[in-house]
Image 1 (spheres, rainbow, N blue to C red):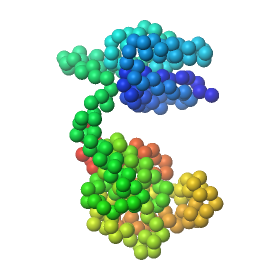
Image 2: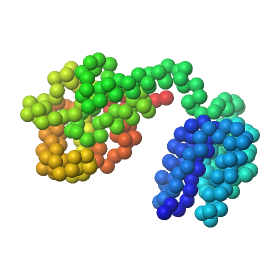
Image 3: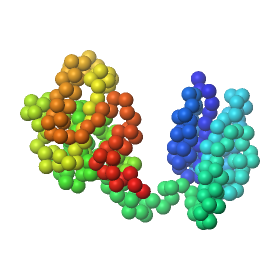
Image 4: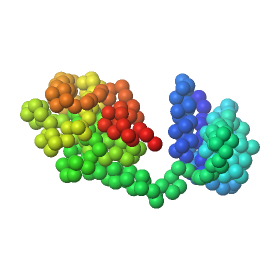
Length: 273
């Protein structure tokens, strides 16, 4: 059972409110039920949101938590005055004090995605996603010189989600290649990767965890057996050491942590805004 319901209310997508709220909630040992209420951009929708929030509080017998990123003053007033909840408004907490400090009025723009479709950064990110999908799991060797990073590692070590995260969040063209038994027999990386060693970053994983992941997909198979996983991981790590490739273990790391480490090593400029 959850201990508290958390609402993320925004006149845009709600992603900013949810990201901020989840970062704060991560500091507490609690089980939360999360409800996103995006596109709350009219007074009418604001009243609907207030009714839903207050009804939840009445049923559960405890105040909901509400994180908001509402720009429209009328909409924000309805939520602030009507909610019987613990309300955390990012605009009044951060934007208004910054306006006073900087002596500049903010844009009062709804959502960070309101005009991104017209921006070069947005189009670069879409191109990066297309590239990463086309170069997933070694599907293509074409245009590898355009890759920002090439991830290698054994099957199910986290290459695909990491590559897609790098593309979607940071606009990096990320290819990924699985290391397979034939590569281990040759004791070297696939030939198509050799001209691009400076772009390669390796991912490894503890064999026990790898076996668990593979057994979810192909239970009881040789592919998922602990012995095979140990051999593959050992061979992959030895190959990466021989090639002088930077690598890390994904066993206990989140996608965000993995991506940040890769950025620091391969594309440190992408950590600057």
